[in-house]
Length: 111
Figure 1 (cartoon, rainbow, N blue to C red):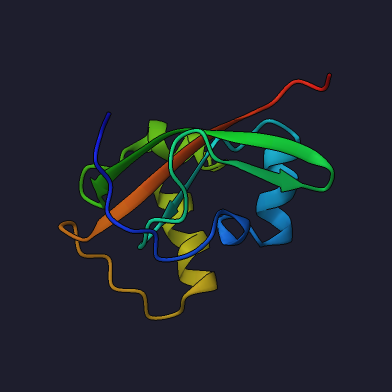
Figure 2 (cartoon, rainbow, N blue to C red):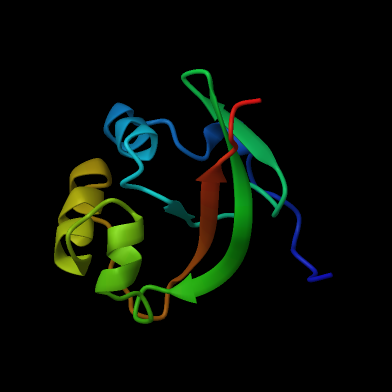
C-alpha cells in the first residue's frame, strides 16, 4: 500500500464551488487538484445526494499537468484551467515546479 502524508483538510472540503459540483454531477469532472492532501483512495464524498469514491491520489507538479489532466478537471485545456484558477485565486503563482495533490474519483452506483 502506498504511503501518504497526513491530510491537510477533510474530503468534505475537496469540491465546494457550485460550478465544480455541477461538472462532477454531469460527469465532466473526475479529478480535483489541491495544494494539500484532502483524501485517501477509498474515501467517499457526497455531493448533492450522490456518492463519489476517491480512486487515486498522487502528486503532480503544475509543469507536468497537460491538457488531458485539465479535461479531467472539467476544462477544455490547461490554458482554460489556469484562467479558472486565476479567477478563484487572483495573483496565483504558476510555478512549474509547484506540487499539487491530484484526487481522482468516480460515482458510486446507487444500490
